Image 1 (tube, one colour):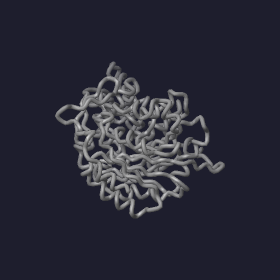
Image 2 (image 1 turned 90 degrees about the horizontal axis):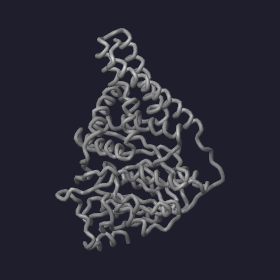
Image 3 (image 1 turned 90 degrees about the vertical axis):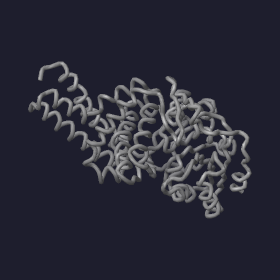
Image 4 (image 1 turned 180 degrees about the vertical axis):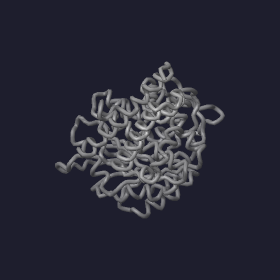
Length: 400
């Protein structure tokens, strides 16, 4: 029990317990200090959604933004391919909500390697308002979402507001990813927010002040990078603006087709985090208490101390998952599949190890190589066919 490997494994067990307890504290302080409505602040907002293909409930996700209890906003829907199956859904949406300023934007020009940002660049040309909400297509919100998310922007020092999400999952792959989000990723976000404030954005939803966006060079500054959400918030923070974490938790319609899709998405995220925050990514080792406690049990020969440490780690881990994921975030998967958290941690640890190496990722059926700076280099055989010359007439007609 006195061997060097034993003590080396003991350290991440102890630090993981500290992380779990800190996450509980951070979540408790954050959600108990939710902002109270102040003077009404209802600026004009342009919502930008980059679309590619159909999600499980695309229409309902988009319709939730059309039903906002908000005086005036734009909904810009960017589609690259005129043959995309999402277009009939968008046409139906425009017909069903005639009072909402809905525009279907053809995004056929090749302006950046990141397909999402490529669409954002072209949607921004049609955005009329001083606040831009970049929101994923698979996000669903309540009717008061816009009213609540814009509140921090009443302070001119705030350049961006970002949101956590809870997942509406289906199947085992979806349950594992939902557990990762609610009991691992979001607690990490809350802890970072508590310790140093928000220095990055979260992909589900980021509201930006146009002035702040222009200060960092617009979407062009992140057009060739994988971690566009992280960088958007990070660049705005570095430009001297505050980035706020909203107390609104949005719904994320998580549709995964099996473990392979989960593996590809998680590898993409892990490698993206590694290139953005290399030392922070390596430091995640000290938060993986479940695999480290099992390794400690093996290294300690099944000693009573090793069993006691394993019990302490697992109790703290499950307490954090329950209190933060199920309690504060109200995540369905965290409530229903709490017993799967140790298995999810082992799976997540394996993905973390995979993320330490390699530079190739898959995204929307295409392959890319990541540079050390996080830039996307399309692999020629799989590069997206972003053509600046195709006929956009069908898409343009759809938005009329």
